[in-house]
Length: 160
Image (tube, rainbow, N blue to C red):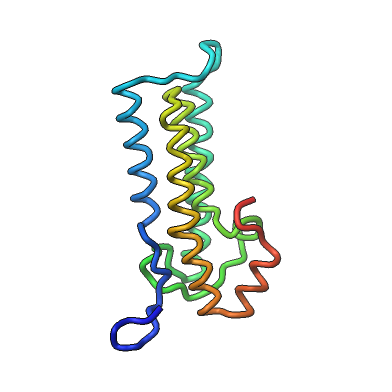
């Protein structure tokens, strides 16, 4: 991507910052749940414990991935330039562990609140992240790092 002066814009050009997209999805699901509750779990399921466990697992993955980025000296925010292809930590298994952590967090909330609305918010959240963020990040990383990124991309899956 280029700015008006013709120089390369050194960021992914994501349509939204992922934490904002996550917060909107979570808030929308919670508001809908208050207005029109749609529980989906049998009463015997320990929803709060199950949801909290999954939410914390997602948070732990997100923190591990963010710490790995910081140790590598590259930016986490999509509006900042990426300075390195990170292949350590959770990035050995997925190219997008931060987003996986966000998905797990949203699923954890859905379970914890026993809310089908929160669970359905995964669909628009996924679409925004996949096409408005990840697709742009991948194109940006290919432009910036070329064969280094293409090689990493061929070895490590996008999600799991």
